[in-house]
Image (tube, rainbow, N blue to C red):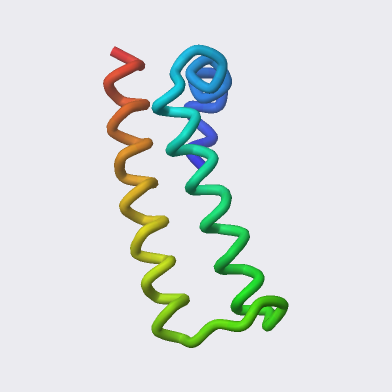
Length: 71
C-alpha cells in the first residue's frame, strides 16, 4: 500500500499513534477479508463487502494523513 510513501509510513508508524492505529486496523481488515474469501473464516458476501468498504475508508484516511505529513 502506497509504495511511494514507504519511508514516510515507517516514520509515522514510529511516531504517530493515530496513524499506527489506522494502519494496523487496515491490515487487520485486509486479513479478515482474505480469510473470509478463502473460506478460512465464515462470512457472507454482504459481510465481505462491508469489510471492504471499511478498509477503503481507512485507506482514504491513511492517504490523507500521508499527504499532510509529506508537505
